[in-house]
Image 1 (cartoon, rainbow over the protein chains, first blue to last red):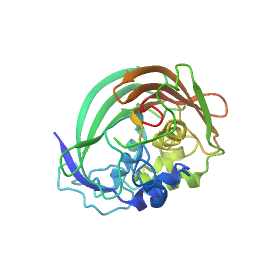
Image 2 (cartoon, chains in turn cyan, green):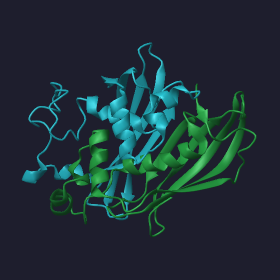
Image 3 (cartoon, rainbow over the protein chains, first blue to last red):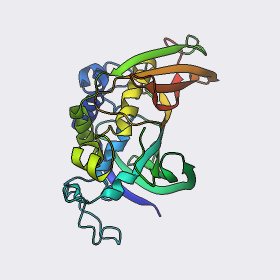
Image 4 (tube, chains in turn yellow, blue):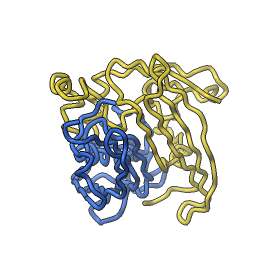
Length: 168
Length: 147
């Protein structure tokens, strides 16, 4: 089942993201510099698409965020929002690891883009892990489209649910 | 697609390598900064009692996506802005506070393309002990110089 939400791209979000990954490249924040390049303006770094999590009402790791509101769905009922780690809740979250991430780029993400993100489950499979028991892999595919419906980014995330804590 | 290339078709060749120190002595502050910027507030990345007592890890650890973002800097600083066609990694090992990471890329294929060339780069990032933390592949569309 496809699941969608809006993702407006703005310069401050790009600045915060670029800063957090230690970027100094002015193409991510200096509009005057970026406009003088063939890009014609500020763009987002290649992994910025994941910051759409802020706008995803179903994002699992919301922290204390109450916006956007959780959608009325069986998954959200009874959960009362995010688990409360300070009460020892959410141990199951620790069993979810990010195994792989892939991006296919069609256009750079730019401030002012009003994107629509549709997510759907991809493949899933199981494997016996040497360190973490049985590992369950599942893909989530997200397609980012602009207002004209043109595909600008495809992101595929592979989650791994482990039997116990995995030490790297 | 508009891009700001730093490497060019006809100049980049199979076997070419690039290495970059992408973070030195990773701080918990940077991990928290990444949580805020990315929207991923999984407590395993910032809540020490949760990470150790509830989850059973030695400490908090970095988001895989932070390591991927750091690794992406090698690619864009080398190849250019807006040139990547794809970028994918496997998260091999956790990255802990205090880690120092070096990303290395190697050109493994260069194919002709109507607007230049499509270069395939194998990329891997290692910690201070030489252990791989992420490994993957990127493809970049590079025009000819002056095109």
